[in-house]
Image 1: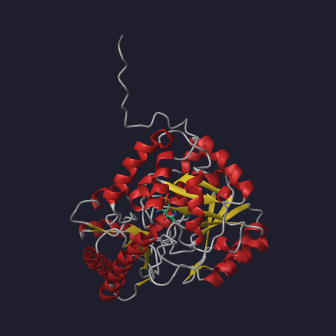
Image 2 (image 1 turned 90 degrees about the horizontal axis):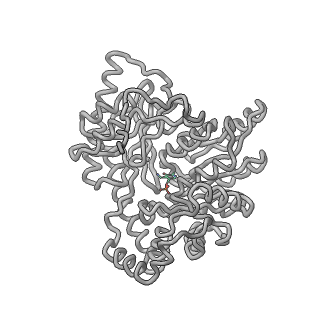
Image 3 (image 1 turned 45 degrees about the vertical axis):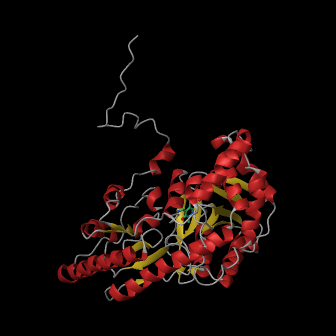
Length: 434
Ligand code: PMP
């Protein structure tokens, strides 16, 4: 019998006419190729959003996992519940209590990272051309998810305290008057990715009030909440309003490779979510859930989070000091009190996407701001992350970045080259930088 050779026609996508409409919003990033280069060791990457898990007690974790398989392999390597294992859902309630959230394990659903939680929330609520509101700028991975469901993302202006309630009110009134269906507000109140901004308590309450007034559901995405670098975390929005859908994750406070996040939702929504989860994966990763549950049981995880905080604090401080010492006049940046990111604003007319190849030439990588908008804004912005490189590398990276910006400003002054105000949207650049 002859086995047919697989066809490897890479010139044309032969299936182009067969793809579903909703795939048209899924685009390969224009900057992905550059990020492959950015992984070279001589390049300091201030682009990646990867947590630094180097300090985890890997030996201990390995021992506990081996023991877990020996003692309980038949359960931890089997299919499990579509909602997630009861033991970890109980423990998650204790984790959320640290941010003032009081919840019952019945209302928690486990997901494959909070990313899948967001995907399922979008799946159960959104039809094509529904509107989701998101702050300006917003998380690249969320924008990708919304695009894949053909949702229209409308950005709401932010100020130094995050999402601006007056702008929210104005945007909602305008959209509702135009007959648009707004399905929810997606917000990252703590140490936002990419802006690094945090909504103070009063701001959260105001945002919730506007949403309640207009009947708009709030989706609170909180993967960085426990990584407060200066003061204790501000209580979550879900702590005041039990109708808020809350997304949590172990990716930043433990390790992203397990792919375990969760959704806390009002009971009826949770039931729909579990149906969606069952059709997506049958059940979320069982082994990972037991591994994390075991870690929470056997380690001093709160102490581990404190040590992560100290490590990220040192890196954040290194970045802010280096920016202050090296960045040219006319630039500004946020001062995060938690999380991983600093958001830089460049002088008007600059084009951060066009600047990236120059950055790579200068051996530094960053993420151009347009990735964090669904509508082509952001060409004047850059996201820098301090989570992965050491403090020393961060300082080198910021020195190089500042040099690139200085050159770019000079070019602009000499030639008066004006970047186009809006690019076509730059889609998600992939997990390593998200
Ligand atoms: N939300 C935000 C704001 C993020 O920054 C990330 C990861 N970069 C996620 C959600 C997804 O995290 P995970 O799926 O690993 O839980």
